[in-house]
Length: 539
Image (cartoon, rainbow, N blue to C red; front, top):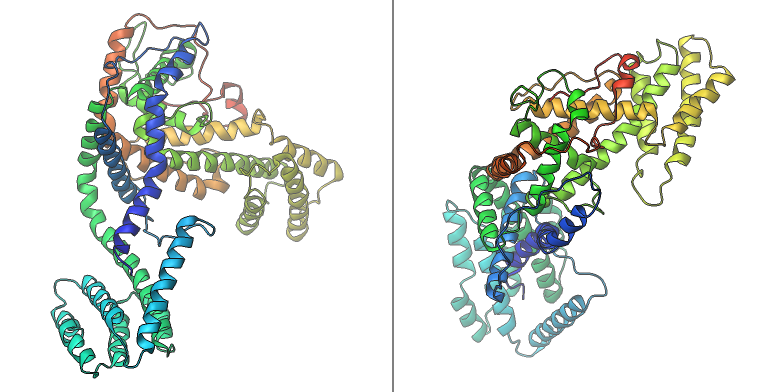
């Protein structure tokens, strides 16, 4: 009936969490040659170093299946460790899927057969006894080693041999057994299931009651699996770094080109940092491994910059590095959140700059205005969302709120000209090249880089000027980003160091000085005076 549902739930969760990672990893490996060739044949001034990998070899189906299983297990373990909200969810089949139709037909046939058996005179209890056996095993599976009394109760009451004898002699009282089962379920279930268990007592017909019992037991299995996940998470975290590194090494041995995109990613970051124009924008000594005519950036600086590049990644055009594939969705989410914060911060900065100096100090008003703008920008990254139209509406709403606040505080009311200018400046934020938006972008990236470079210090860096109204949201994103990066470093830093050492040996004295500066950081030097704070990125 509910055979191996717990196992299917675990498998389904593993598939759902690791499917994208596994598929992306395979695509990254299969498409590495094509992508690298395209990159190589692009701009003549951009030099891409081809990673040295072993020649391709034929693999058996068994090896492919074993590799896929290893990737799935690695992705599932990674998801449990990295995602504090990870939960196994009940399997929900698509409405019109063949699998769901077959399942419904089989289940209906089973319950119809049970109903027929129990309607006979005398009743036949073959199916009912099998169900009682399944329920018994499920209840026992919920017990912890110390639950000796409950184990004895379940074993004694749901003694299948005794139940069969009672059925043969016409002395079986199923309603009494079901009452015991419901009571035991109420004892073992999570508080969230109390209501479902209570509803079972209102069902009087035996077949619908059995169906409802199995439905609630399935939910309890999911609860137990999630409890097990939360219990093993602290122990898994201790072992996960070595486990993931071991699994990736096994994958690398079977697929030697599994670091091609990582090599390209780190190589581009190193070239960006070595570029003369970019290096001049850095504070003195920032990120340099040494001094002289061609100072080499340290491996840590290269890796930090490479991670920051992921926040500006073109996911449709650029293949994602293999070692961060399992976190691609998280980096995409962070990227969207930062874009949202950039626009939000720019709108608030423009508003508070135009309004009276005392209005920004009104904490309640600043928070209210921020919430209004956040709500109106909620769907910012949907294809149907038009940022310029939204900012036009935001400009109108902001002007109303500012005028109202000015009147309440006794300040000089907004003139028509000022309102027109404010609406125009807010609407101009829609352009990625808008100066205010670029300032916000630079300051946010500066904050993230500073926090990342601070290592394992718990204290957050000082929030750059102009980002005060969104500092809570920025700190939340920064903490997520740094945790993600630090964990990835713990797992894959040996590979990164090896790649960078290899590239340094290959490119010694061969740096192309004509490469354009990277698009990650806009040229912020022209804004440093008006911004009142350094917008340059420390190395």
